[in-house]
Image 1: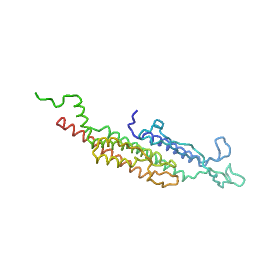
Image 2: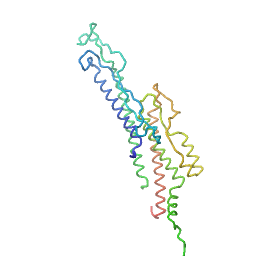
Image 3: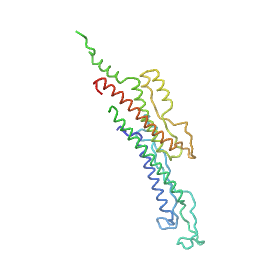
Image 4: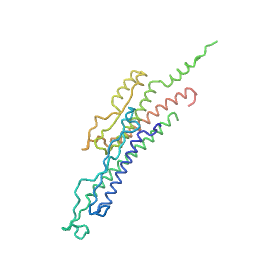
Length: 146
Length: 140
């Protein structure tokens, strides 16, 4: 099928990837104080982060068609941050150790907010591309009209 | 008895083809193709705003010079044989540590510039067609 909106594959894949990134950030923020894992064992939540990678467009791959160099993006994996848990002195906490220290998740809330904003900016930029593609398609359809 | 001006079907086809084979018109069509292709490149670049080691794409720079030469030579075949393609933009430098060469602001500006170019080219083609229609029907 002909593609009326140019570059829509790249853009939709990016919108999807950025949305996943935002979901991961919201998960991190929600678990900023979780000291136990889902099984109830004492294990502070670990910060999750997404890794993006380039994927070639399937239908154009290897065909050598013009425009086939443009690629899509996908989430390669979601991995845990390699950082030590944040130790906080809270002797009254149920999960405190002998010295009164509690292992809190290795999450920095400011870092998460910055990540959230940059994901939201990237999302906006990609929406802008769709808007422009739509405008271009309308102009093309209006060729020959007064 | 006067000979009719067009007596063979091939004459009519040749005439109709002639209407749409002016160099400027063909060049405008070529430019429209390039604009659509550049939009695809910009869409890909903006999609990879956060992908490590992604290098930004653009229309290969030799296209502009080739089309200029073809238009200057007023050669229809030469204009039609110019084939634009996307290539990695070697002039872009990475401003971040992850090796990504896409910059959000410049990419959005290029997106808007490309949109205006597309508008110009569609209007150019529409203008040519309307003039033809005026010449054929006698009313605009």
